[in-house]
Structures are given as structure tokens and as C-alpha cells.
Image (cartoon, rainbow, N blue to C red):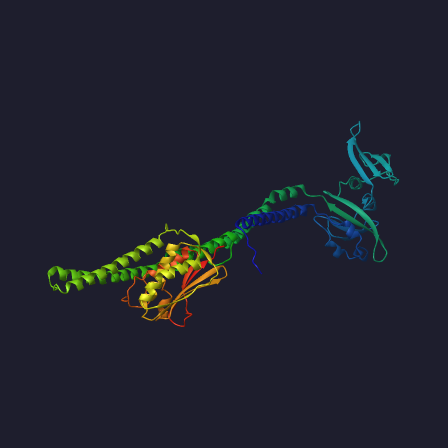
Length: 518
């Protein structure tokens, strides 16, 4: 499965988004804790669930205690107010009159009460029953006697505690309601439910201390930041360390590949580019070492090729100048000097031609030429030289016209070098064969002989400068001719090669390949 590439911008954007989401989730969690911290003050008992529980009728009051929240409490009394069970000692028995003044649980009616003073300065208490049917009011004097009105219960006198229950003064900081139910044995009972009001002081303290909850955001933010720093570090730092290691190794001459390690796309691309660059540097270093060796060999070969004729010329010249050679032998000495001088001139000419074709500014002057006709004319001019050297010539050129873009002079020089090599390095009676064959969009020109051939160990480098067909350089030639041949063929858009399976069965076979033009 192909690994999905991720860019640096995508990594940073994704990490930032995840970091922001993580902080938002942390803030939401802290807010939930803070809200729970505050809500614990305002949590009230679910009285509806408690009164509907079957445990109430069965007398399982201890089990119902677990349903209470905060300062809430409940008690079970008889209809006369006698205590049966309570969850809080402050909520206990009361009189039947007091019990009647407690509001019924779930009732839509409510009692509003307030106190003031009459014109004579005595206390007055006003009580109003508000129900869906309307309002009923009564007025009590300072002794809690009914002065006017009534609540419909026929009472004319209340106690201070009864008024306190009517007005909601008792219990303090709480509300009280009652619910009649039947006990386990069918006895009528009353459930008193006290719901405590939130303690303002406790609420204030809770708000004051709630900043401690928000302090959790600090370690959460640090942990989230550390996680995403480690995530980005893993995606960026490790590839950078690997690249740094590879660069440091490269400066020390060692080869360490970065490879396709983990990381973002840009860093992988940099690593891949560095590996390519490192490979090319290694190839360049190997090529430089090869060229150094070739240069050293070239200097040695040039020194050898120049030293031998110069030594001979200098020796004979010194002998002639000192009068050591008799007059009868002087013509022979002069002939040797002349021959060696011609060899030096030929060597200089070869150097000149090689330098010229290898120069970047060297260019051909190609023209559309009928190759077969060109070769017939060229070989006709060479026939006398080949026959005089004691060679036989076998020519196989098709009648079909083949056109190429050809620089006739330079291509003739390449053919000269191939034929000169064959004449120089083979004995009398050797057959020289020249043939032309069309191969698709190319034409193959073969120059072959059935002579001694070239040793296999030197065949690979035969087109390199200063390489000759044998270890000994005493056979003549500069070793530049085939290099010139290859260069001219390449400038024509073709190639020059040495066949490893000569058509004549033995000897040497060179193949020049040229592109055909329409």
C-alpha cells in the first residue's frame, strides 16, 4: 500500500488544529468540573422519585436516605404529628395544628404572609392563600388570633410556630412540604420533606475557590504542547538529524544514505535529492580517478612516442656533427633522421586532429549525401594504396541509394584511420572487407579484416585515447586514431564500435552507425 505523503504545511496545520481541539476539549472538561463544583451547592433532592419509590410505603426509609442531596431531609410522622422516623434530628415531631400549616407537596396553591403594624402600633399578620380557584386572605393580631377572614379551615387562633410554618419562616433557610401516604400496615402517615435553600456564604466560598479548578488548564496545556512538540519533532527532527549525519559523513569522505525515512514530503524529497547528489559525487570521484589514471598513462605514452624518435634523431645528428660517421654511411643516417622526423610530424598531426575534434567549438559541415556513391568514390581512391600494401579488398555496397547528413572530409578522415590501422597492424595478404547495410532508420558501415585481431583485454578500451592494439607500442601509431573515429561518428549522430563476432570469422571488425535522412 502506497504511503500517503504529507507536506510540512499540512503537518503544521494539522498539528495546530489538533492542539487547538485538545485545548478546547481540556477547557470543556475543566468547565464541566467547575460546573459540577458549583452545582453541588444547588443540587436538590428529586422528591418526585422519592415519593414514587415503593420503598416509602414499605418502610424502607434508611434506603431512601441515600436519595437526599445537600442539607435536605425528610421525616415520617403520624397524622397527629408523632414522629415515626427522621433522617435529621432537627426535623421531628410536631403538633397536628403545626402539621396542618405545612403546605402540601405538589399543590398549585401557595401562601403569602407578611407582618406590619396597625394604627395603634400593635402587630398585625396578613396571610393570603393563592390557589387556582382564587385568593383567600386573613388577618391575625399580635396574639395570632384571626381578626378577619380565614383560610377556610374554621380556625380562629394560631400559635407562633403555626404562623411560622404558614409563612415559611420554619424551618430556617429551607422549605417544608408534606405528603400523606399509607404505611406498610395501611396506617395513614405523613411524609415531611425539607428542602434546604442554597447557603449564600457557602456559594460565595465555592465561587472564590473555583479558580483552583481552572488551574488544571495549565498542566493540561503543558501536556498538550509537549505532546504536539514531540509529534512535530518526530516528523521533522529525526529526518533532519539523518540528513545532517549524511552531510557530515560526506565531508569526511564516507558515504551515508539518507534513505526514504519517515517525515514530511519536503524532507523526504531533500533526502532523496541528497542521495542522488551523493551518488553522482561518488561517480564523479570514480571518473576523476579514472581520468587521472588515464592522464598519467597518456603522459607516459606521449613521452614514449616522442622520446624514441627524438633520441634516434639526436644520436645520429650528434654522430654526423662530430664526424664519426664515414661519408659513405651519411646518406643512410640522413634517411633514418628523415623517417624519424616524419614519424614525429605524424604524431604531431594526430595530436592536432584529436585536439581539434575534442574541442567544444568544433563543428561539422554536414550535407545530404548519398552514402553508397560516396563510399564507392572513396574506396576507388584508396584502391591503389591498399593493393600496393599487399592487401586484397572486398567491397559490398548495395545499389539502393541511402542518404545521410555527412561531412565528407571528416568522415573520410575516420575511414582513413580505420584502413590505416588495418594496413599497419596486419601482414601481407590480409583481406580488407568494407560493407554497407541498412538497419531500420540507421545504416551500418563495416570495415573488417581477417588479420591478427585485437586482444580481448584491450578491446574494451580500444577507443580510448593512446590505447593501441597490443601492450607494446613499437608497432607504430599514436593510439589516437580510433578516438578520432569515435568522436567523428558521434558528431554525425551515430556511433563507432568493435564487433566481438567478426563476420570474417577472425581478425578485426569495426562498425560505424549513422542515422538515415529522408
